[in-house]
Length: 232
Image (cartoon, rainbow, N blue to C red; front, side, top):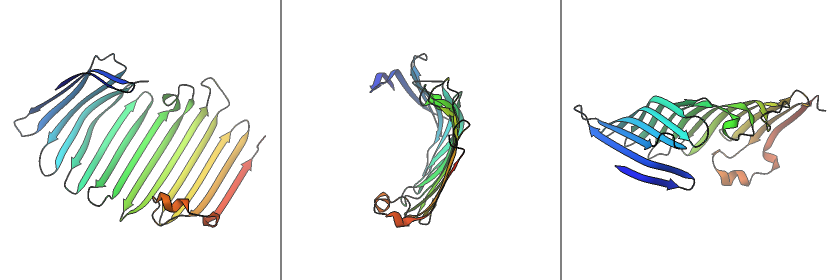
């Protein structure tokens, strides 16, 4: 299948070529290419598909150019699509701007989720005016209709001027489960000082229930500590 001049908003792919062929072992080799290669956007994929009650997709390699910045590349990921469960295993991608890793399972009937995302990115990839880098480790679970999650994130040398020297380092650790949210957030600037916030909140039993969060009152805050050090 070949599509010419595929356009959506500001994304344009001059040629999209999708090819698939049967192998002697019953598997299906699938290839996706976009041309010409110097284009602003690029998506190249190679995958081996195993048909059956559970469809297996071995993502052999991918190359993605998101429109700005370097290409993101990865290989050897696995996706399994079964009647009960979708599994994503070892989906990784990396570029000169950072790296990303995803492992997840999704219950198709139950809606249960167990996902882990690890990433690191240069902040200039998000906005050319930014300086510094960010790391994030995120774990999300949803079982029996209840949500829980952990976030461990940090920024290093952040400035809103790529030539600026007045930078900020920060960390955020957030845990949400069983009706409780605990967060520890800290920011440090060598010239100004540092600030730290620790908060413990009684949340709804299902931490993913947005409507229940909106009706909480101040009494839901069990504990709150704010610490300022050497602020000028």
